[in-house]
Image (tube, rainbow, N blue to C red; front, side):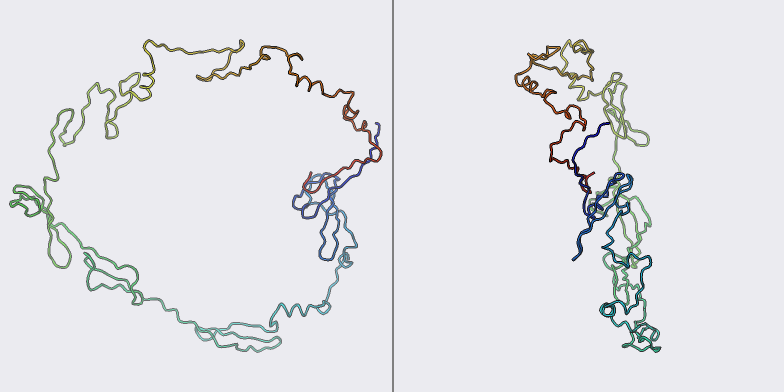
Length: 383
C-alpha cells in the first residue's frame, strides 16, 4: 500500500468546562477533549484533558491529566493534616462576628398553671437565672350558645327563634311556619252571586276545604275551588276517539301514507321503495333535475394510452403533458433549447479535472509547498 505524505495540523476539540458540561457529548474512543477552566480572581485559567471511551458521556469520563503545580502539597498528601482552632488565623474573629452571646444558654420553664418563664445560664455556671417577667395565658373558656324565642313572630311565621353566642345574635333567625291540616272537604252549590268566592254564580258547584290552622288562635280557614275549573266535556268524532276512561286518541286509517304515532306525537315518515310517505328535500331536488325520458348512464372504464385508469366513485383525475415534446418517445439534441444545450456542453470533461477529483483517493492529492491542511475537531457542541 503506497503512502502519501500530507502536511497537516490537528486542532483538538476545545471548549470551556461550562460548555462541555452543558452539551455533555459522547466522545469517540481515543478522542481527546481539551477543557479550559476559567481563571478565579488573580489565578490564571487552567487546561485539563479527558479521553473518550466510545460509550461514556463527557461528565462520566475521568480526568486524564492535571498540573501538579496548581495543587497545594497538603492536598496531594495521602493523609491530610489536622489543625487546632488556635492554628487557624482569624477563626475567633469570624465566630465572634457570626455568633452572638455564645456563652449563654436559655430555656423556658413553667410559671404557675397557665404561664412560662425565660431563664438563662452562663457557660461554666450551674445556676439558672430568671430573664424578665413570666408570661401568662388566659383560660380557655368555651363560648355559650343559647336559642331564644322572639316576643313577636316575623312575617307570616308561627314563631321566630334566634341563636345567641355569649348573648350576641349569630346568623339568620329561624322561622317556624304555620301548620295547615285539612279537616274536611265537601261539594256545595253557590246560592248568591259572588259568594262564598269571587266570580261565583248561583248554581255553580264548588269544593269547600275546611282547614285547621295551628296558629294559637284556634280559628279555622276555608279554601274554595270551583268544580267547573277542574273538568270540561269532550265528544268523539272526525278521527278522534274517546275511551271509557275518558282518554282521547287519534284514529289512523289503513292508507295513512307514513303518518304514525311516535313518542306521544304524530310524525310523517319519508317515503321508501316499499311504503308511501313524505318526499324528502333531497328527493325533491333530485327529481326536479330529471328530464322527461331520461335514462341512467354511467362510464365504467376509462383508458389512457390503452391502460385502464382507476375510477374513484364519480371522479377521475388525469395528468396529460402538453407541448411538442409530449408527442416524442425520445428527445435528441436538436429538440433542446439553445440555453439547455449550451449548459450541457459546458460540463467539464474528465481530462479537465484533477486526479483526486476523478478517483476520490487521497493518494492522488497534490500539495503545494508551504500549504498545510488543518484538521479542526470542533468544540463541545460539535460532533
